[in-house]
Image (tube, rainbow over all chains, first blue to last red; front, side, top):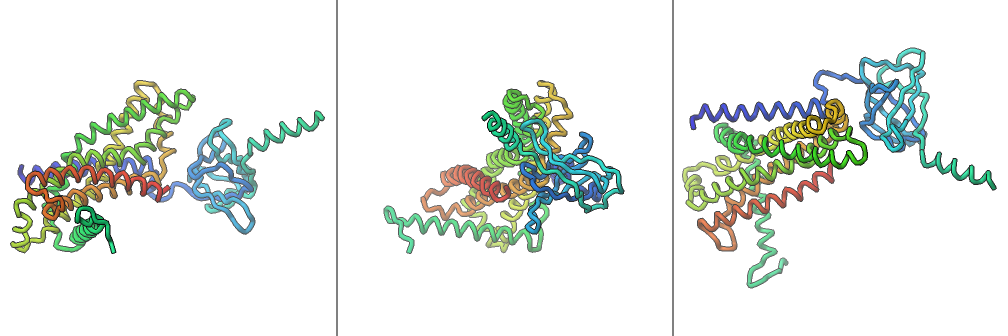
Length: 151
Length: 262
């Protein structure tokens, strides 16, 4: 085989491979090459039980971002959830963030209820939060408390 | 001291010696990759051999693996009414596990065995000694291009495999079983995170290194084989050893990498 043909065939392989690699990295891995399309917003919850990194952030049922990071603040014993919100979406300072469940056994997501004051700066904090609802606790409370009343 | 002698042979010492030899061999090869002079022509030839020539078999394997994964997950998910998770299941399983592993096994069979036999025959016919006589560094001329070519080709082939597999999954899920294309792709894009891409890429790099390391080292040290089998029989033996040992080592490394990243 001539040297040129070898190089061309190798080149074709490299191009196909790189196209596939960039498809996977950009589409699936959500690699941001063109600057940040999202900005961070934090919210502190008394319980972030069941919430995972990569969970949706929804406002009005529409996806507006993802949960980026979940940490535990040892100073005030709260779960600090960092969310990456799409640049096109502005969140009010007095908006409320609550952790909800999609369906009964579905994934946890963060629901943003809009407020009415000024918009938050990137890195700002949503102060009004509602922790994740523990379905088991609710059910046991309902079942056992109603049982007690019958006595 | 190391004393595990059976029939007058110290197997434990032998094992340690072989491990050390293979380790030094790898370091020598990797050192030649980073130090000049760089040899481009042998590298292109090896990328052609490991990469381009494997492209077709990887595409065919990728389509069918993607299709069967989609078929199996569809059948499982439809029982729970969670067919919308099909894209996520196909994307994650291909990205994290099936893509790197099956690509690795295919490349071991297609390129690893051939490289081992090629270098083994060179050793048999004293071609490697001839290279040394001519003051040509066999590590630079034979080993480094193959190692670097594997480190470049295997991740690219893995990416091709996964992309084609996603397409095969699309064919079965969306076209045959009429899952909505939106839920297939959006579910996949949401479920697959950057760390999954990192995991797939790390695995394919590690697997590429392992398979070519084992193949070249087995061929290169053909004459040092303690079982005393040389000649054409020796080539056949080390080629078989290569396929077995690199597959096992690869699957072992698969678990290690997964547990380190997760």
